[in-house]
Amino acid sequence: MTSARPTSQPSTLTESQTESLPSAPATVPAHLKRIVLTGFMGAGKSTIGRLLASRIGWNFLDVDAHLEARTGATIPQLFERHGEAHFRRLESSALASALGRSQAVLALGGGAPEELTNRLLIEQTPATFTIFLDAPFPTLYDRCMLQDIGRPVLADPEAAQLRFARRHPLYRRLARLTIDTADSTPAETVEAILSGLNQTSMNQTPHSRT
Image: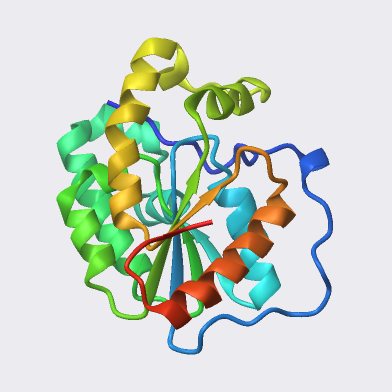
């Protein structure tokens, strides 16, 4: 059982890694209405999501934060009070609500793709493009450890790595574009996303990797 990151916690990449993006606004394929970022903890979904949204003039929404706002409780509190099964139903409802927004960049909770309901919601929502922010587990683990953030699921590194291994193929199957973030700054990742979005849209391939 996992606990998602509370909304008050900082993003997964340090401020020193985040440089200014180009001032000129970028464009995305006109038929798209929302972009979903998925990946394991430490992937930088919130950091990159905010930068990407700013770059293209869209809104950013962290789905975990959206869930907390809807329920008036933190993710760990929801797990403790209701158990994981009920939490997953609440998560799916929050995701469905988030997917109803247009011109939005959504950061998905790390465990959300494990639920078939969530994968179907994303896959069956028109004009939605999902991107997997990928990196090796040691890189993601080190990013998390560099922050003063309590992440109970990382207390046992071997169990966390098994969780990562279980989720990784789900991330890849769900996404139409995979971006390797291991050696890139957030700004470089955003530019890779923009390039990949336009290339993938033109090619109309089900999966691409940058």
